[in-house]
Each structure stands twice: as C-alpha cells, then as structure tokens.
Amino acid sequence: MSRNQLNIRVSDELESLIDKKRIDLASTMKIIPTRSDVVRYALESYLGITMSETDQDGRTTDKLKKGTAARTAK
Image (cartoon, rainbow, N blue to C red):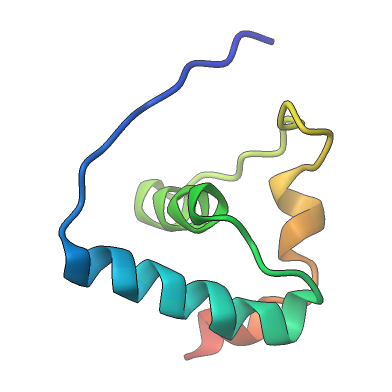
C-alpha cells in the first residue's frame, strides 16, 4: 500500500486542542495517541469513512480506537 505524508501548519491554539484530545483519549485507549492519530480520527469522522489499512508502524486505526466509543458519545 502506498502511503503519502501530509504536512500541515496549525495555530498554537489548535495544537493545544489536539494535545488535550490526546490526553482525553488516553484514558480509554490505554496509550496516548499521536497527533497524527488524532488527525486521522478527525478525518475519518469528517469524511464518514473508516481507515482500516495498517499504518507503517504496524498499528491500525481500528486497533487504536478500541475502547473509544465514549469519545464519540460526547
């Protein structure tokens, strides 16, 4: 599977909100997701898709999201 890198610039405020979400998700995921993970979750939600392909580091977004049903109920 081909993977492409997307570099984005965000404001200090958005970066802080992403980091805050990482800590919120850590309580249900048992790991602290990366900023990239949080952006992927947001894209999945916004686009109405599921990214089930394996990431380069061997994790899948599905595996990372197990136990995160609480985040969508907020």
